[in-house]
Image 1: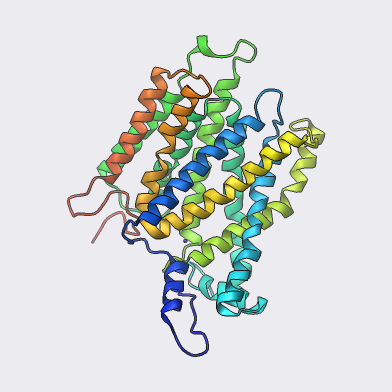
Image 2: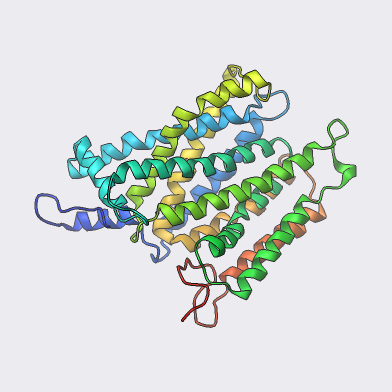
Length: 372
């Protein structure tokens, strides 16, 4: 996301076996009611978080994208003490044992020379957080500029750009069906981003176009984040323990390195710093909590349902957000939104079609461009 589960007191038990399954995740797990419930919870958390962000960044509200990102991502650090508490209760780990457990998993990461493994993990997490922060900040900047349904459709299309980067950087095999799916997705993004000049705000006619630019930028940054994570932070046997620890390190590094930009943006006038009122504080707390819920439930959904089913399910946020825009916010559907959303879903469906050799086109592969 080297096996890390260790024998306790010299023997292995059924409980430890379950712990290993929970720690690693099972990409081939059968879909269970619990997994479906977790996936639906992740979708609900994503949708609710998006709506909460749109409320707090709405007109006459606390429109401070970087501050929102700092609080939301910084809260990921809560996972660190909770994860240690779990290891303390289940495995009786001391702090040194806990770090050793993480280090043993990280030893199996690609391009690891075995020297200073945990420091290497921190360095890679810093690089990963750079991609993650750039994508998330672009997303926050676009929330107040375009409809949430359009933003969600563009943001969730990052999986297609991930494939393009995987071909270039991970030597993934090229398939014609995958290329067609990518082009269909890009066409959908262009359709969604095709704003009617008559519909743009007369007060700020460039705001919507800037919003689309940030949304597309967010999609690319997220794709870079996913490819970097796959290339440098996924051991041979995926580990839920390591994935959650990396998430907590993202929160820790955000808290440490996210403060200077607050002052920089304030003094340059890009984003003035101010203390939010009580209403905004409450909504910001909801945004942070929902972000934690989404990340936790989505990771568990991958473990229960497998990454393929989880990825399919999260695409449901596209029609859900568009429907909420229509029924709650009163945003009318444009032809471009309908056609673009359908194109993205169709492109994703094309990736799910089985190939002639019986594999799904969206399965993760580590194969050369030209197979022997």
